[in-house]
Image 1 (cartoon, helix red, strand yellow):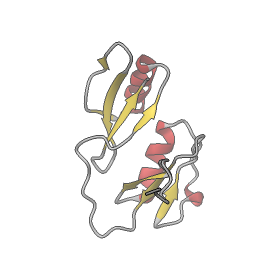
Image 2 (cartoon, helix red, strand yellow; image 1 turned 90 degrees about the vertical axis):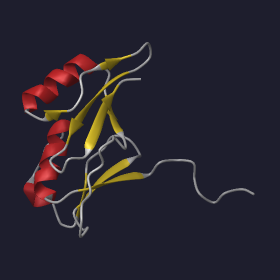
Image 3 (cartoon, helix red, strand yellow; image 1 turned 120 degrees about the horizontal axis):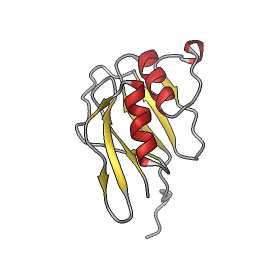
Image 4 (cartoon, helix red, strand yellow; image 1 turned 30 degrees about the vertical axis):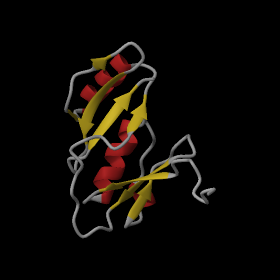
Length: 120
């Protein structure tokens, strides 16, 4: 049977407790300008350069952070990305893991969600 569901990831929702704080944190992480007046609860859509969106969702009664990465942000330079995250003062949860075709490390957002930064 042919599925009516498209084989494409559309949007990733990230549960957050403080929408403005998280919008600033994620905007800084991906190098996008941030303006508080653009944040209108309960959700904030990060400006992305790909069809897959990232929506910060503060409309939940309870936020249970993921202790494992549910998605990753891509990088072409894992070492520069690691140094950038260090300079931002963000919580780094793992050292860079290097394999033949992929490298990654994990960080933690203000709500405790684990976010992967990954090549490949």
